Length: 129
Image (cartoon, rainbow, N blue to C red; front, side, top):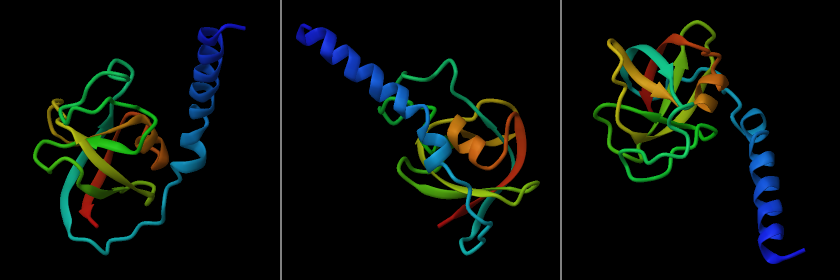
């Protein structure tokens, strides 16, 4: 097998394995409100059309990572997002700008939204760590 085929097989294996990471690593945490609440409002998730594209911070967007888009928080800021309906929370890192949908306070990656039980739009609080 030539080197390109080996490299391709390794890349496919790694990408296939990455598909399983969100369920094992993106586990929701019990609600903790130790940090100051920054915002409350509606959250959604984004990813299908953006996966692999550059974010506003310059990094490549990966919908399987625990990241989010926020209008004003500095890139690299970590915040806890709590789903008010389920009580589940997840810590995400801000790496993009948005959301651009009316009335939303944060856009979550698919993995982040799944971790707290949001499949469309949900009511959340965003708290500093």
